[in-house]
Length: 289
Image (cartoon, rainbow, N blue to C red; front, side, top):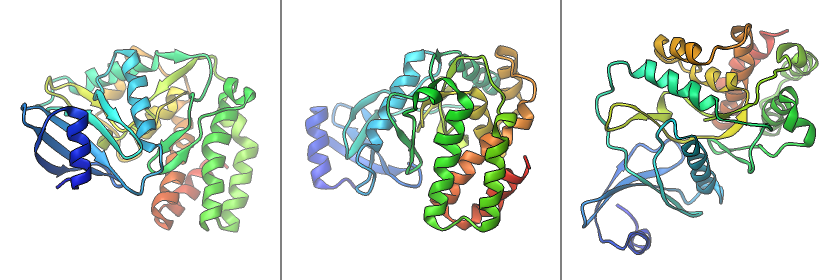
């Protein structure tokens, strides 16, 4: 049940009386509930006393940024502050027959929503770890600089702070740094709007049987990074990738670069969940050495 303080607060925000609340899945760091009010409406709410102060504000801004593209549905943000995020409830239904083709096509169209610079107007979070999006003037224009400094090196430095870096890992990462420009070759594409953390747990099937994106870690970057994340835990249906590539063909060599983009998320998992991800992180680095 909601605490009495949150119940009073939400009733003031909604101008309605809460008659029921029950817990639902909300990821590994949040307390998530569906609340029902007297008028018959339902809402999704996440709370967490231990979250960083602005994590919900960043999530709301990410959802709003994706919504600007008007391509893939996201939950409407009803209210947000440092303590809670209140969203519309997404009613679910059986997915449409060509769900993954439709999803892949729409995801490609989302990546056509672009910006002239890499990064975002604010830093946000990847899980409960900070994701640094505010770039230097060089990084704003140079994807390789942005990705290495703001993604790989930031997480590696955090691994060192957390005690997960061995001498072998340190030497291997230095060799990777020296090769990074030959791995991530210069690109002429504008920076694409990225979900930033898309895996099977961060999309839903809405009442129309179509995709709805949730829990983003939004920034503008190379779209290959978004696609690599989708493959981290087994990948999506093959029709997703074929439809994506028909709509917005990938550059040659994407398969070779895929692991460099997986590395960011595995480093993040190492920092979030511990040494069980050490070997996978080291192997991804050594793939390029």
